[in-house]
Length: 192
Image (cartoon, rainbow, N blue to C red):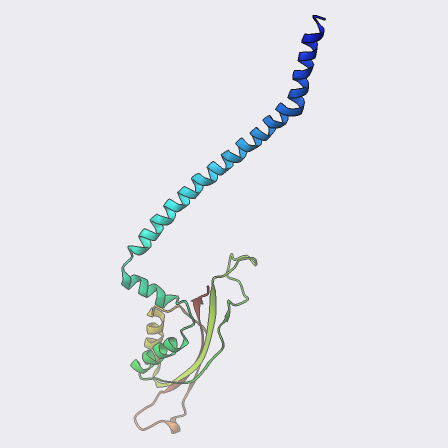
């Protein structure tokens, strides 16, 4: 009888360990691992919040004039009217008249990829294409016009450029060299 009670108690302890204590211990370990993962995520979240606050502070610290320049460089809408008037102003400054304006509806970014860009890359901008002709100026004026377009804040890519000389019989007296220039350009805007 002396041995039965201790063996029974040991057996009861083993059964309670296998049925109750061990599953609870495994569950506690899983919860501890989950808590550690949550604490790590919370630490990362605090780092991101600190970084975000720092970046927002730096952004808010930018001069308003610089932010306006950025908005003109890459607007958040096609802003086609402003683009056409900008080009028209530059052309008139150099003695050109703009005509034959054609544009396509804004479309998603072009299908071709830039060097090093993967096919799966998503773009956060769209493309606006514009065609127009200018005429009435000399070649030196045209070069100055291109320099002004190049130095403008708006991102503009010239896709194609064609030019032709106006027949001398069509020119007013005193003008020797006048050309017509046809442009195909594209510009970009941020999509949301």
